[in-house]
Amino acid sequence: MTEETPQPHKRRVRYSGRNPRKFAEKYKELDPARYAGDIEHILAKGQTPAGMHRPICVGEILSILDPKPGEVCLDATLGYGGHSEKLLPKLLPGGKLFATDVDPLELPKAEARLRGLGFGPDVFIARKMNFAGVLGLLPEAGGGFDCVLADLGVSSMQLDNPARGFTYKADGPLDLRLNPGRGRPASEMLNTISAEALEKILFDYADEPQAKEIAQAIKAALLPVTTTARLAAAVSDGLKKLDPKTEDSLIKKALQRTFMALRIAVNEELSVLDRFLDILPWCLKPGGRVAILSFHSGEDRRVKKAFLKGEDAGIYSKIAPSPMRPSPEERRGNPRSACAKLRWAVRSDKPAQ
Image 1 (cartoon, rainbow, N blue to C red):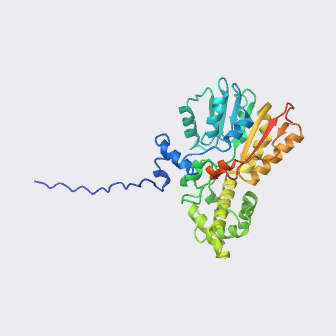
Image 2 (cartoon, helix red, strand yellow; image 1 turned 90 degrees about the horizontal axis):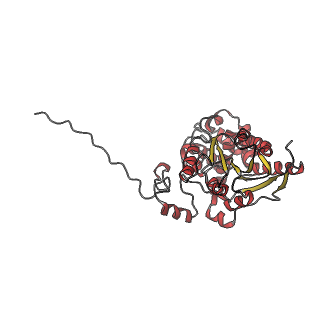
Image 3 (cartoon, rainbow, N blue to C red; image 1 turned 180 degrees about the vertical axis):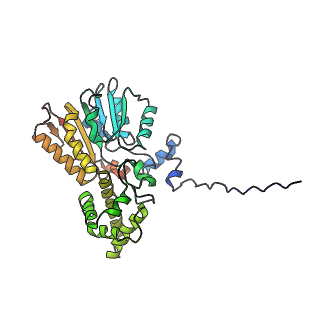
């Protein structure tokens, strides 16, 4: 009689508990349809559930764009699709909403979510493309759009997922690309850039007051800065070496500005925005409305300048006299909206030059 070969012991999969900390284990937040009560509880606390994005200034945007049945509109930065979800019913019957996004990971999810809400390809057309190329949509759109929305912020899905490298709050590869299939990640850029060039990025793209010190600290890091944790440590250690009494709140602000500046540089966001603002008049029908949400001064300055220039040239008949801000209630309920600025313009009947 032969003895049976003993089977290796299998460890039970460890249960992560009711409130898992890892992004991939947040089963309730990442499947909001099954856990509506939990999601409402998270939202009520002023927090954004993992893998979910809360659209900002929805009421203000709907009032500005005033979408009507039969009109053709564009959501130039689809993201989670929160704004599109509110715009689409206003366009029915007979209208269409085009939506663009460069993120190949999030675009299919947003499209599937909106399809699940009943918006078929006859009314909702999604395209993976940069919004600097929306002139290519004009033949499909009947020559122009009645209203255009551009939300320039990074979505919560991108921020919350450590694998994308957008946040210093969790360790992950230092990537920061909106489209992981194009360009080079931030880690590669940091390996080749000079301290002087990095200082300029931090100052120009994030108004970082200690740009020189942070740039030098990053370049002087003992280990290659290949992960979000290593970048955060380099910035934090560098500032504390300058002044051991540096408050944590100041380090947090410096980290936010550093990650934002690198993200803008990696994705060439400001040059893309400049191109979009240049072609925008050609994309709007006479009387067409545009609303742009920006999240830092570099973006807002460009939008303001383009709208003022267009008004002076007679291309825009009206522009926002000053930026609109989220209400105090929205800022309390959604802290990620705090730095948002909303500007708008109305296309005149004058042909674009």
